[in-house]
Length: 353
Image 1: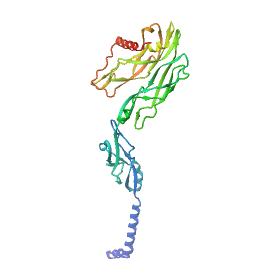
Image 2: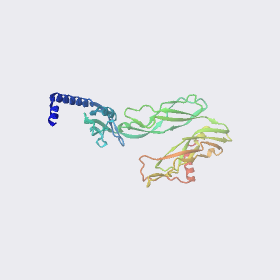
Image 3: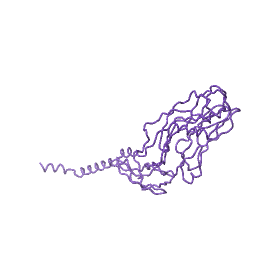
Image 4: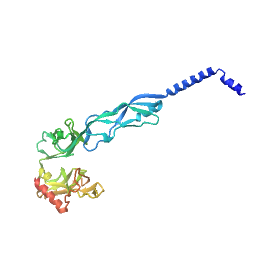
């Protein structure tokens, strides 16, 4: 029986062997048809720079790599691959930074980097806080005058090379027309383009509140707006942010009064009595914002007027620690009610009607 079985196996053995070889070739070709080798560009992930460092030029966004693997796997996962740069390899100046790894590569896929490094240029940039200045064109109609203007914000932080920052001492806004203006108004003005290489941190929009008043007020009940709010008793290491920068008041006067007297002889004051604790490195009390009541303080020339209403009567105050403020600074003495009033009187004496 074994002899018969052997005879059947060996019968036409050449044809059978040829058929097996052909089948193997077809199988190998079929498997190879599922293998894909192609070159793709993967995005480069650059580390975030700390402090005053920045990328001086637009760095390269992609590098070429060769990927090899099953066709469906390569086509799907190619979109998730990216080259990663180690932050420790980034230095000031122009350097060839190595591409150490490609992330997002699944098991079974081979990736070959066709470039080992990318050029990166890092420069040191400085920061500078400069004031913003409003410029006006024209004049109000007869019997009206522009008395005050309030900008929000009053300063802005710019960044750039130290030698470029030295050339800028202030930011001047485009002109605001006062022609035919008979009452207070507000304008949102955009900061113009700065010299090449100078950037702006934050919004480029500035709100300018302009107070236009008649030259004189009659006796009786009147309303005046644009009185700036002063923050009294402030810890020298804190910076307050007021929900309102100015108030309007309704008052009664027996005698006629000059308009300039009202706005220069009245102070709107709020107590800023939060403090900074350098030991715990936090603001006390922690609950923010502070709701503060607005107080109106008059100089001696305005004792005869009666304040009927303040709008708004209360404002919100948020505090933050001043940047670069040493923790061992001695905070200003918030004082008591008497000292706050005395500070306001000093301000009024420096700004007589």
